[in-house]
Image (cartoon, rainbow, N blue to C red; front, top):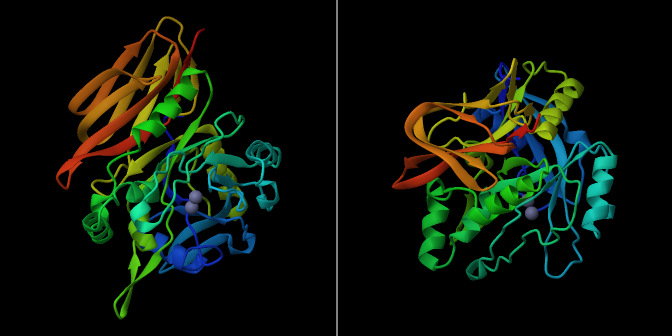
Length: 358
Ligand SMILES: [Zn+2]
Ligand SMILES: [Zn+2]
C-alpha cells in the first residue's frame, strides 16, 4: 500500500496510575505540543480504559489510546515486560506465565510486543536489568527494538555520565542496541513475521536537586524523539473506534517504521517493493517471480543500508533515493543513519518487506 497516509505516534509511557508522574491529560497536552497524531499509554499492570479518547487544544486533536505493560511483579529478578495493545480487557492476571499471557492477549484480539528486549543494568543508579529472557515464547506480534529509557540506562556508568545524559537529552539516543537488532534478524531469518516498534518509555520522572524538584525528560521531549510512524489507508477521522482499529491494524501488519525525529523529521520515509504487476510496502509480502525491485525514499540525504537476515545487502551514502533489484527470498529491512551532535546516530529503522518464493 505505497500511497498511504502517514501518522506519527508515541507508544509506551506511564502515568500516576503506575510509576509516571503525569496524568493522561498531561500526556495528551504534551503530545499536542509535539505534533503527534496519537499516543498509547501503557501503565504497569493496570488498564485504564476510561482515559481513552480524543483530547483537544486550540483546534488541534490527538488520540490517546490505553494499553498496558504487563509483567509478573513477584518474579525475582524482574524480567519479561510485555506491551499489550487493543486487548480491551485487564491482562495482568496472566502475568505469571509469559506464554499464557501472549496467548491470552492474541485470543482477546490484542497485540503483544516484547518491551525493552535488551535492557542493561545501571548499578550506579540502582536500576536492574529488565530484559526479556523467555525467548522460547511464540505468537507475539513484535519487538520494541528501540527503547529510550533502556538506552539512557546504558549510558549511566559514572557520576559524570549521569549528569551529562540527564541534562542533555539529545545526546542519549544513538540507536537500537545491536543485540536487539540481532535478535530481530534471527527471528526474521527463521521465517517469522515480527513487527518492530520504537518506544518512549516516558515517565516524566521527578528528581530532587537540593531545594528544587526537576522533571527528568518531560513527556514532550520523548514525543519529539523516538516515535513510531504508521502508514494508514486513509487519514484519521476523529472517531475513536474507527481510528483505534486503523492504528492497531497498521501495528499488527507492520505498516510502520521507527523514526528518531529529534535531529531531523523522518516523515516521508518510504520503503516499497515492485514485482510483476504488484507493488507492496512495509509489512507486506511479494512473490519473487524472477526479481523484485526494492525502492527506498529518505526524507533527506543520509547513509542507508538494506539488510536481509542480519547481512548488509547494500550500503548507500549521501543519497535520498536508493533502489536495488533482489533475487533471493527473505525479509528485507532498511536502516538509515545521520550525523548529529558530534556522532553518527540511528535515524530510521523500517519494518521488513517479505520477499517469498513464487
Ligand atoms: Zn518495562
Ligand atoms: Zn515501561
